[in-house]
Image (cartoon, rainbow, N blue to C red):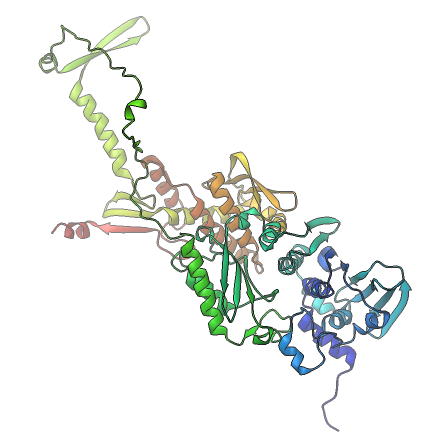
Amino acid sequence: MGKLKVLPASIANMIAAGEVVGRPASVVKELMENAIDAGASQIDVIVKDAGRTSIQVIDDGCGMSPADAVLCFERHATSKISEAADLQHITSYGFRGEALASIAAVAEVTLKTRRASDDTGTQVSITDPAAVRTSSVAAPAGSNFLVRNLFYNTPARRKFLKSDTVELKHIVEEFTRVAITRPEIAFSLNSNGRDIYRLRKAKSLKFRVLDLMGTNVAGDLVDLSADTSIVRVSGFLAKPDSARKTVGNQFFFVNGRYFRSAYLHKAVMNAYAEYVPEGYTPSYFIWLEVDPGSVDVNIHPTKAEVKFEEDSVIFQTIFACVKETLGRNAFGEGIDFDTEGRVEMPQMGSNFEEYKGPANRPEPVLDSGYDPFESIANPSFETEIHTGESSYTYPVERSQNYGMLFEENQAAQAKALIVKDKYILSPSSSGLMIVSIRRAWERIIYERSLKALSKNAPVTQTALFPVQVQVGASACLLFEEHASELSAMGFDISPFGTDTVVVNGVPEGWTCEPGKVDGMVQDLTLILSEDNAGLPELVNSSLASKMATLGSINAQVPRNALEAKQLIDTLFACDNADLTASGHRIISILPIDEIDKKFH
């Protein structure tokens, strides 16, 4: 007898479900997409315990007949395709009939549905793939899916779920990717009785982006548009100066479907190359419209990736469109004439006399007793010091007094010279020491962050006026999740409502300027959005390094020689003053003999 055997349908379905249902967010995505395909104008998502306990998706779409309500849970039951040729013209989200079957294989599912033309609705309950119960119920037009106890029959899968905060963050991401493409549909997302999103129908895609991402992101967007015989490109690009070192808010959509593409992402980054520093990534929201027959949306189990028939043409079109948009909006750097700090001279025309005002020239005063040669004959002056009832007069040499003043001033200037707000120059025993201000702060903040994360008391400088920043619901969840880590490092940031945070204080050395706080919060959002797992020491080191990089960008630049010297002293108090946490050099010494060679 052979060794091969065919798996029972129940086991095969559970294995296949792993391709479609990876976590609660996968269920939310599939049910939302089905609701859109059903023609819904309102879709409500309700989750408990980040989807572990239950996920409910309610829509006002077309609903299903009693027969279809049962059949929809069979694998590959679909109304979208009937023959192979239909795969070349797919315009809907779901078409393979796998989602509901996969969900029912690993969870308990209850469906209530009714068509507008039916008097009563149908309820289908599945507590076991082999046990399906149906009944007639009163129900509004549309469909109501309730998914409970996800992965109850696959405990290993359930064990690998992350914390509720992390899983809810993934739910919010999937909700966003679906809701952002359909401004004509109203959406809501509720978690444990609290509204995270309540989106009304939006006037346009840009208003939907604003509702989901907040003004912190949407406020920096410019329109993108191009139309060719192969592809129509539309969407929004972020201004180059809002680019960040951490990836986030990069979206591609094709025919209304979200997808990932490292290849097309490179086209965008190539177009931005002249405008953003290396290693920085801008936000973008790009919609592509192509002939459905020229794109394969069936190459990935969750349809997160697609394949274009003419991908090189798509690449070049996106590159050219982004490049043209950036150039048209004049994002290139202007000519720097180094006028900072100079007095702005007013420009007057022929009517200058009208603006100069009345002449208030002082009358000359003559001192007939003044002798300009007296100071030469008597080169000292007297100063009187009173102590109690006695007074003493001491002669003080003028030249000696002024000389000391200038020597002290020159000595202070010689200790530290600030160049272009980027470097500090200071004499050393072997030559000239050059210190990178940004990297010095990076090292200082890194070691401070490590100590703070090791439960040492952080130092927080309180903002004179708290700054509100609209970050979106997903980011608010991140700040709630990482509140203890942020507080440990000296941040005082608290959620305000469902999509806004209030910055009350920042770590010592960081700036509280309102204009820079927005960028700081956006950077923090992207840093915190990365999953941090592993040994606490490694996590702390990684997080401290990221915070140091961010802090160095937003740190205060020394305003004078005294502050520059204080920064150098603080740097030398670090465990390692030579290198940043990422291994970049902080200090460089220009030897005397190298300086001498410059004058040979």
